[in-house]
Amino acid sequence: MITLQDYFIDRPHPTEYNLNALTLLYRVNNLLAAYTTDTGLIVPNNPATGSQVSGSGDGGFRLPTSLTGSSKSAHKVAQAIDITDHGEHLDKWLDKYPDALIKYDLYREEPSATINWCHLSTRKPLSARRTFKP
Image (cartoon, rainbow, N blue to C red; front, top):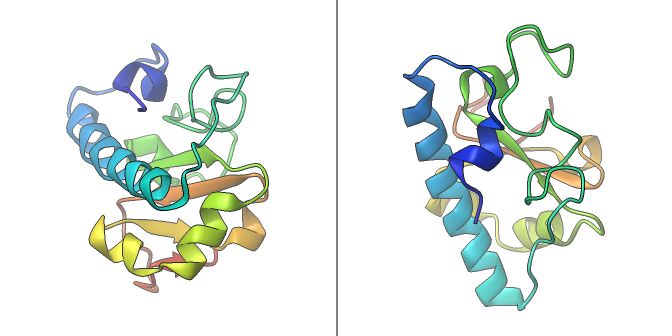
C-alpha cells in the first residue's frame, strides 16, 4: 500500500495537494489490490524509494522545479504516480483488463513510453483516452 509519506517523501507542497494525492492513492491502491487478487502477483517495492513508487525520487510528487517530465506534469499537482513494473506485468494485466482503468477512474501512459514502470493519473488527458501517448 502506497502512503502519503511514500508519495510526497517530505517534499513541501500546498496543503490542497493532499486531497489530490489521497484521491490518486485511493484509486491506485485499489487497482493494485485488484491486480494482486486477480494475478497472485505483488508489485515489488523499489529499493530506491522503499515503496512501489518507481524511479529514484521523482515517481511520486514532483516539485515545481523538477526537470523530470513535462513542465505541466500531473506529478507536480499530485495527480500522477509511476509504479514499479519490471517485466511489464501490471501493464500487461491492464492491456488484458482495460476496464480496470475505468473502474478505478485512472489514466495510463502508453506502456511503450514507460518501460519498467506504469504511469497512472487521475487527470484526464486531452485525448480523453484511458491509455494515452505522452
